[in-house]
Image (cartoon, rainbow, N blue to C red; front, side):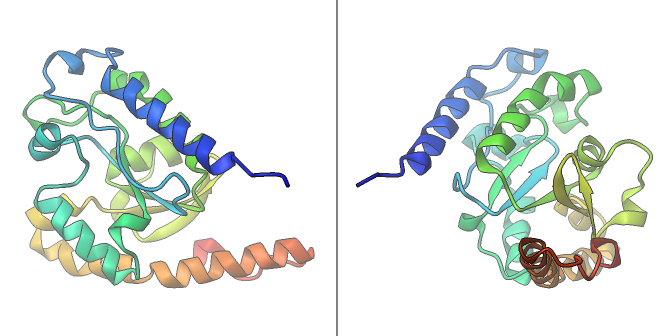
Length: 213
C-alpha cells in the first residue's frame, strides 16, 4: 500500500519556514523587533489573508492580528462564513516597523521571499489582501483601494480579493459598514470559484466573471 506523505511534508516545510523567518536578519527591522511574526494557520488552508506588518501586540505575542484589529477580523471572517482557524493569516512584512509606521519598499522587497515560499507551500485557492501595501504587492501599483475594495481579480497566478485593512474601519467608523459588506460577499465569491473550477474540469466556459463580484 502506498502512503501519501505529502501533507506531512508540507507541514514540515511550513514549520521549517517559520523557524527561518524567526531568525531572519534580511532587513534592519530585526534590530528593533521583539520577535518576528511568521503567520499562523493550517498548511492546507484554502484561504490566505495577507496584511501589512505586525503591530505592537503582534510583536509581543508572535502571532498575527491579535490586537483590536485582530478581534474585529475574527468577527469579519464570521460574516464571510469563515472561522479563523481554517484560514492562514500572515503579513507582507514579518517584523514590526518602529512606531507602527508603514513598511518601507526595501523592507517589503527583503521580506517577500518568505511570502512567496508560504504561497508555494499552502497553495491557497483565494488570497484576501488587507490594506494597500498587501494589495500593491499582489496587484501592482496604480490601484486605489477606495476604488477596488471588495472586488476579486487574478494576479500573480492567484485569485486575489482586495479589502480594506480592519484597522481602517476602527480608525474611521464610516468605513465599518463597507468593510462588513465586503466580507459578507465572500461566500458568493467562493461559490463562483467552485463553479468555475467545475466548468474548467469539464472544458466548459467559466461563466460568471470575477470582475463582476
